[in-house]
Length: 309
Length: 230
Image (tube, rainbow over the protein chains, first blue to last red):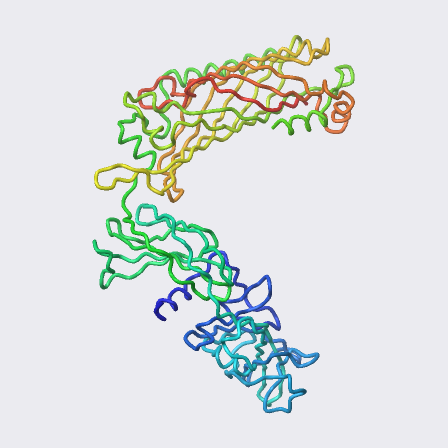
């Protein structure tokens, strides 16, 4: 898959995957945070430096109220410093040979809750002593607030896992037409080492031979955890090649599914079909003359019963 | 359903008339089979309803509350009823001149409302402990309906009026466990609990208006449910 396409997929809004802001003392990857396991992921593209880490942190101040100023330094490490929320900092002497840590990045302070969108996953992994080929390696990323007096005055930290494996490609079973949209249904690829977390379907305009139409953009669905979705915003009468991609919890895309072709077009709902068949109903209220008479009779009955009581 | 009925039968039990709390009326909850006879106005078959929704019958859920207005011999009650019905089908799509089903849903939804007069012959229940009470009901109906497209938007809505007649038989569940029924009456004021089955004939076409479709059932509706006398 081309990097541009991958980036487009990763930038899609999330549907069904919870995205919470960083809590106090927390640092997370915005797109690849698992709120259940309280863990972020560094995926294959991020680890290879092809896609940015999108970090967000929320600093715990150790000096009373957060005052700003100074800088944030982003460290990665294979463990936290004992009894603190800090990562070990190089070039300080390390407590033991088992500790691997290093500075990843730094950024000027603007807020206690802050984002940085271009941190390198590759650097983070290397500083923590891992390579991207080590699936499942755990590391920590920490934001250290170094205030204007160069004092280390606050921290936020998060647990990360390197995930470079991708789910198997799903099988696209059916694509059905709608009005300006197509519905794709698929089944999960059997086996594989990584389970799919969500899916994105895509529709590419093609000509009669199935070749992409130059200048026409591929349209993506929103992310879904289900096994079907609509791809909306399509042009009626245009033929599309549809495929679906599965993503791991870390955001690694599977290969594309098998393609299927379909053409959206106008549809007739039940009301259209009824009118088209010559139906006489017009909607609204259209009682015949007997209707009001019956209602009057009911009212009279009610009054009569009331008087009898 | 059988388990539910048996469970309710164990919980909701009989209370002899002499020990029962004062009666106000009844509350009912139930369901009846239903299929609107919309295709009746078309000579061609299949009509639009069958084309979109198929041939199956659906279920209309029903709730009702009635006030007892005469209880000398049996019970005459005046009440209000409502419910919900929905049929879901697929919109049609034309491909190369051939009409086929699309992936877009379309629904017909109905909320029936009615004013009903019910006579229940429960004199044998109250005086001789025979646990069966036949009943009859006439009702003025107003079916509030709307059709939705694949996006769930309302395409057209309206209301169709009519009438219905119902005949049914209610079985006194209290008969199965009188002591529990007395306890329920003491705790909640429910005098009796009935299981009922009924047949309904409806005529919902705006009393023959030439501008209305028929939401009458294609044939008799079979219904069942629970009725609480309180």
